[in-house]
Image 1 (tube, rainbow over the protein chains, first blue to last red):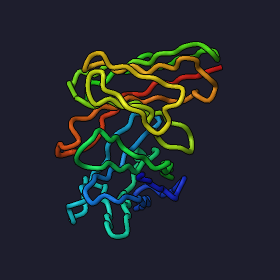
Image 2 (cartoon, one colour):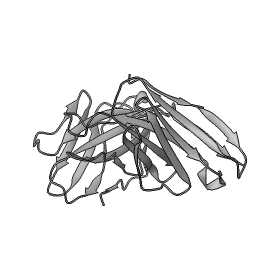
Image 3 (cartoon, one colour):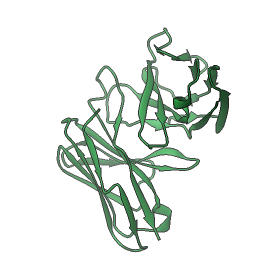
Image 4 (cartoon, helix red, strand yellow):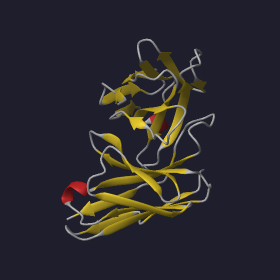
Length: 116
Length: 115
């Protein structure tokens, strides 16, 4: 079974600074997706960024970027120029690609606090 | 935003009573999921459906049943609610896993409190 581990239950960063959230995963598959979801106090699950395992290039979405290390099974999220609106729970998630109806396997989440 | 509606959004019930949560989608996606979210556990899969009347168990399925009689509706039933089932429940939908993006789209969640 796949597992996703987020080792930082909580992180704090000053507004406008850069923060990196860590995620490691375990799988025997070679083709899969990785995601970061954001959950603000509204409780809505919002997709921040996605990475396809067969792509070597790290995904970026504006101020959000990932460092995908496939051999190390590591998938960290970097948030640049942190803003107050970035304060939320962040979940790393894995999904096997191809076949079946597998959903996402989530990590336990990292609570990100933005200090003004 | 994906058209996913969960109802009810909030419910308080007593131990031993039956509870049904409904997920309705307007996206005609084949796959539907029920997750529960608890502090310190992230989101965990309860049940999922890969078509009308086709369902399967997830990681934490004990005490839950599901039904899907139409593409757009996926029901989660707690036959006899217990306090350990107090949680926030999320419905999610997805196109085929073979699609190019692989992401799940989530409803807004239903908070259930079992007293």
